[in-house]
Picture (cartoon, rainbow, N blue to C red):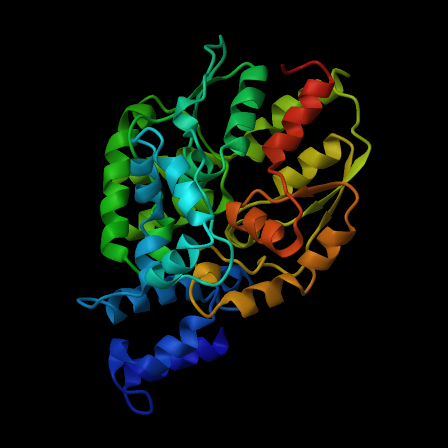
Length: 377
């Protein structure tokens, strides 16, 4: 962080580093920044290099053609949303992404790394059935990863919330926190997406409904980043009303434990806490939740899993990405005998591609426990 901050400082001075935002030296210095946001909380002066990198990339590529990965990964939320509007298209795309003939072509055209490509869910989370309950109505934030790529955590979360008596609604239309555009430095598009999201969310915000996030990176983006990017009172309200799944359900789960309706699980869990949540969120709620359920948890201590969203899928980052996973995450996952928990879609993807192990979201763990105790169907 100190070195990269110094390079940016030299860029603004224009003495030893020339070319301003067009400088390839600065671009190279920022290339291996994972945008993990650890520095935002661990740096003594809270230098948020991820935000600086996004700003630099915004100016560096302004008016120029960007790397293919910026278009493929940066625009993934909208592309996935549109794909699910066409019956059968997600299945066709999935087949293409796993084709030994087409995959190398897609990688080359998209500027993507030599690693397995992510696929689309066959059915969007928007189409998952929901039940009207007598209790409080809550909004489940339909982040792009949970809604269109891996719907398992979303389906589990809906069932858990309904089992606790809540009515779950999912916003109509396309909404997005803008994370993938932000991390690739497409700040103009980030702001447009957020303005659109504010309009779609306004009816729910006017009712004061709690918004529950499942994907830690998106939850942190909504609660910490959006208001700094766009001055919009509805986005400010969205930030205030958004909370994590673990924090929201914790009181209800503790009540069931106190009423002896949930037996202790008596098992173990290895948890990869998402780096954005570790830095700017509060993973303590999930830890207390697991403890209340009788799950002995160990957390990975080395921070980012190594995929870091779009970063690990960008060309020439494969070797470094997997090397980061081998520091601690991969070896401990290979030795794990209990649950492997990773709420972040990128973290689950990295674990599966690096070890062959399928990690689960905490919502899926909670649902299994509720079912074992007859609390959920």
